[in-house]
Image 1 (cartoon, rainbow, N blue to C red):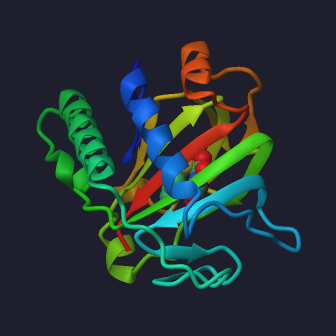
Image 2: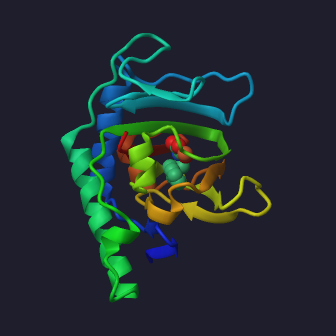
Amino acid sequence: SSEILRPGMVLLKNHINHAEQMKIIKVCRDLGLGAGGFYKPCFGNGGKMNLQMMCLGMDWDPERKVYDYRRSVDDAIPPSVPDEFKQIVKRAVTESHALIKEKHKKCNPADVIPSMQPDICIINFYSKTGTLGLHQDKDETEESLDKGLPVVSISIGDSAEFLYGEHGDVEGANKVILESGDVLIFGGKSRHIFHGVKSILPDTAPKALVAEANLRPGRLNLTFRKY
Ligand code: MD3
Ligand code: FE
């Protein structure tokens, strides 16, 4: 059951059906092996552990913490964000607006979560030991951040223990399980929130998905933003 977790933060459970998850996996696979595809970001000791990353639209450099049209690891130009991905994001935000409207009948849901035309998608593939330390996303433009334009996240494959909170301490953070097909939306008053991935839960991906997609253990996460 979908829910509003805090102002501006909505979890849509099982919003992406099996067929659409299959399609997303295929697109990520195709793009991931081409120029600008998956690579393992290396850190002295960073928050990103045991995951592979690739960006669409623009590159995000985890070492310099900046966006760029060309990626600094290998000079590749990131592939553009596919139209079918943009359609899914649009549908998810519309669905979140319906939930918000249901709960707060008099409000304008676009004031809680503004609409967003994504020009960037960051794709992370976590291995079964993958983690991501608590952090804020604040490398987008001042305009994007000031307007509280949402980040829309899609989870596919194994489930994750996802942490979020007002502060950067793990002890004070809230936890929610993100399962395959879930969409998480962070906008408005939640755009600045600390968040991270505590662990990947082994063997939790839908069996049919693993079999049909020949999926290896791990979790695929796509986050859509506007630069
Ligand atoms: C809340 N990814 O790519 S998705 C990231 O599961 C990132 O791969 C995580 O954090 C992952 O930056 C979490 C949920 C998410 C993404 C971006 C956010 C939550 C957010 C930006 C602002 C606030
Ligand atoms: Fe993030």
